[in-house]
Image (tube, rainbow, N blue to C red; front, top):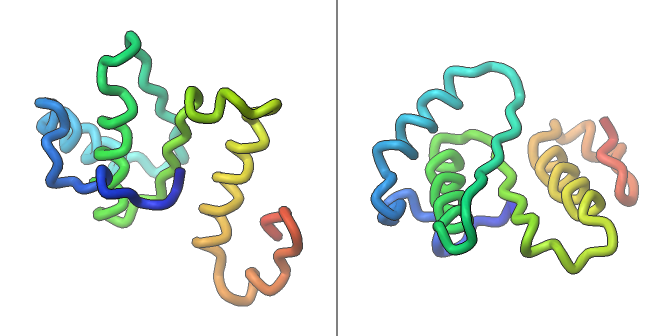
Length: 110
């Protein structure tokens, strides 16, 4: 889910976790390596809304981010294809213009 939504607003409440979200965003910005972050918790604990709001904060800070909701993609025969499509879409957004000309079909051209 690379497209921002109305719940991506960093001004949203963060379900009482705004200090954590901001501190965690600061930590992520200090790390130079690519990261994969997973949120785990019981059903209904606010993982998805928090992830969307936190992603909005990161996007505001110009950090490339993908939010992939495994539950939302559970109907897919192979969810890894949906995840690969999200990664490809984000990569294409950040390719220099001269590299974008070499992208064909579903390949990222990198």
